[in-house]
Length: 311
Image 1 (cartoon, one colour):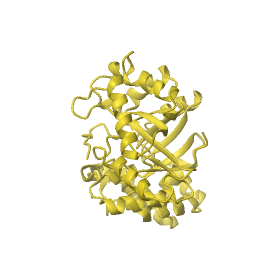
Image 2 (cartoon, one colour):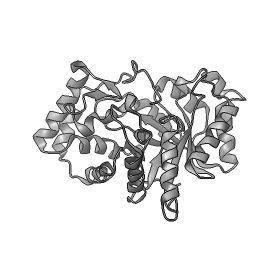
Image 3 (cartoon, helix red, strand yellow):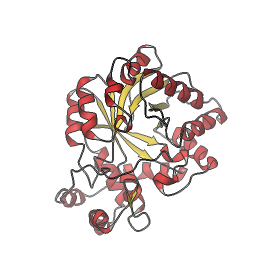
Image 4 (cartoon, one colour):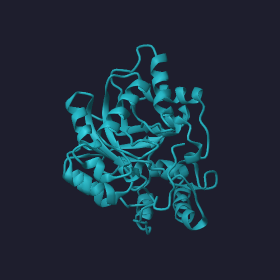
């Protein structure tokens, strides 16, 4: 599958104020989906559990309202998710997750289907066992319900053994290969060595690099203190000295990495789609990269203390 260098994430379109700190109504969500599909890179990513299914439902409603529905060149990526109440993630739950996704999206198949967030399931052993979600995911590709299968998660220590033991087409890592964090470095190297395409998600670290530490003093979906924000502020000072938006530098940090097949940026309004395209094309001086390269950057898990919520 030929995938473009940019993909647009739609979790915030499911209205998740607990995660992002703001709400998104249906009208704005539909306009954002249209902006993605009308862009040069009509590649959108969602999941069954984003907003308890609301992200997929809103995408499906937007597709149903469009003349011609889903554009021929568009790519839709979604994810199998654990049972939201019990954490169970066996083959039966995986099948039900896909059926719910297809019904919400109004599609009979998707392009990319990921196993999502195994670290939050009740048991990883259940996922990889003979009656688990991973064997079910492989069968779904064989049945033609998707064109490619992937692993999309956060915790590198959980992802690595699964990546080594199973054959994937693609992998999503998020918040762990950014201007401020390099936690996924070895994971990315391993994926590339195995011929797995890497999608690097959340280059803005949950929005702080796009909106700025003053307007959005949060880091990886959590309220952030000065110790957490100080490295962000230093990067902002470097960008300000050279007259370039921090968001453009954060985005291009991922885009310029030859190991990254696609950079996945979350967007919550149509203007963000246009802004992303502009930032991707902006000329960033070499001096910026040199100064950023001299910074001490964390390699710890940036979400180690995060409490996950579905909304």
